[in-house]
Length: 146
Image (cartoon, rainbow, N blue to C red; front, side, top):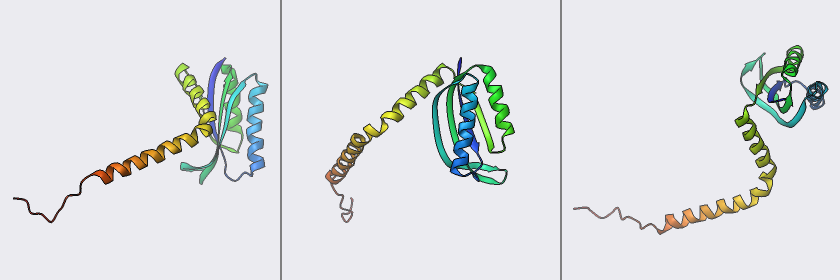
């Protein structure tokens, strides 16, 4: 089994229920074909880089999964047939991308716990900057230089 990640963009005219139904459809398609879903992220509605079918926004969904290569063909055929999918991209992860994705998932889960100390550190850094700025001697611009 290979590691894959796919991002697909759904049309912005869908309701939340329709969007969730569409995402579930593709997740079920993957699991029915023997794939194992490792990670799912809903990136929400975002602005597109360029207009697609006269639409400027779309619902982004990210799926990371393990599957056989034959599953990808089935998935992409279903993406093409579904009118709700505006764009999609599926990429096979190499070992470096897999390790990076693993680190990203671990950091994302621990991010909320680390938020408080980091904000305190940033406040201390700002205070230190203020102190160093105030310790600098002022130059008198009224004095004439010889």
